[in-house]
Image (cartoon, rainbow, N blue to C red; front, side):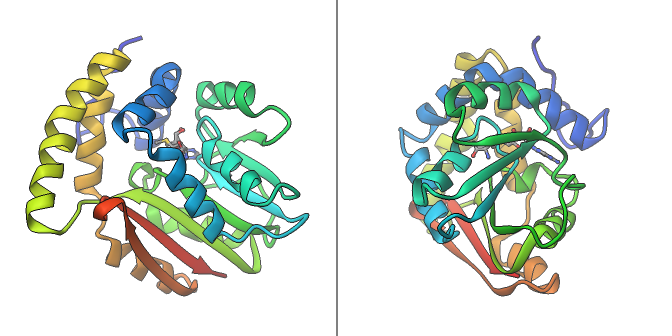
Length: 237
Ligand SMILES: C[S@@+](CC[C@H](N)C(=O)[O-])C[C@H]1O[C@@H](n2cnc3c(N)ncnc32)[C@H](O)[C@@H]1O
């Protein structure tokens, strides 16, 4: 199926739009991540997973797990920890299950209405999803609800670099070259046009941290990684 995207004027609700898009690009999703980040994407998840501090024999959650890479990075950070990955795109998780069978427990669900009890997880992460949800405040509120008191929340998301010259160079790649390359390799050009649009339409890192603080996360803060193109958010329940 060739997925058709209508930027910012969605003809369906955002959740349906995003779910349909990821189910459509699932077969090429991992390849595209490797190509677009020049092979650096797993390293980012590994470093972010360490910040989650999954405890020995603990229980960790990866929201919007997709094909399970962030969930697997949590297992790598602490091999005794059990990891649950939740997503609503079943095709993405089907691929994840073949890669990480026995390492990650996959469960279908909407991260804005988690089918999970409160005060359950030692840590919770999400990667590359904040700009895709209909309400980022609800996403963090749900994340906080299912964390145990003292549990850590980590989010990883693409953002726009700020350094003037680098910002322009990155913009040429991210806004122009990458959508063409992604469209060509995946056969889903609309999905890779949506990627930079969704980043530009999303909140600034300082605004995301303000949402986290407002919801009661302690020590909420962000760091810029990957020459400022990634934001890593940290907060404690
Ligand atoms: C860019 S992918 C990221 C996947 C994975 N976290 C990673 O690091 O590769 C975004 C994922 O978020 C999922 N997603 C978006 N909104 C969601 C929601 N409300 N509930 C559950 N999953 C959601 C999509 O289905 C997709 O698999």
